[in-house]
Image (cartoon, rainbow, N blue to C red; front, side, top):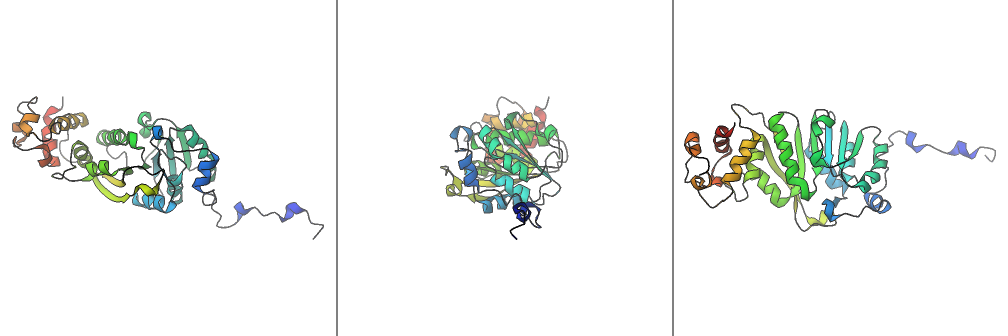
Length: 294
């Protein structure tokens, strides 16, 4: 034994059956400490470090084995790990913070070609050109850009039907309620009309502040958006935006007052002007929006 070369006794654990390079990565808290990746308020960062929770979020998106997943704001990579472990064909992560981009490099290596991390502003990134279909978006969205990101994706769905298979997104609970609550409910408004026109919207589960590092001051919610197949005449996205801005601009007023700058619109759509906006259904808003198309 003393004559054996010590190098001959070394075992390459990466070559052993069942070795999982992603599971072998250090804990997320270690990744944060090694890369000085303190959550920054200016980036809207609140990190999810419990991989049981991130696994649960990934499962909401369904079978990912043939899907190209888009993630916004991966931070130290907890949800990214779960998406890869769930079998995503690929994950493209858009990260604004250069510290997080550096922290994710070990995960890029472990993913063996399935993870692409891009430093950039998600609001100015053309995801449809960057990522081939079928596309799925799964993200713990930075709160400060969550609503404009969703609006951009909904507009893409209107203009490019089928461009996303499903979107699984985290919002502040208050925003999630605005997206998913049906007509007639207190939270129903502009965002709900546009979201529910184009998608089946479900608030799947909530997460308390204690689930995050650092804890935010609000409860968060996971929303699942499954794009609809639209039939019949459909207005332009900008027309629905214009209509809902006017209709919900003064919620306590009747529609005939809110829409007085659009004479004849209520009559054309056969909608009672004495109603308030939250009393209308999604189909009513679509009928009202159609005459606004140029």
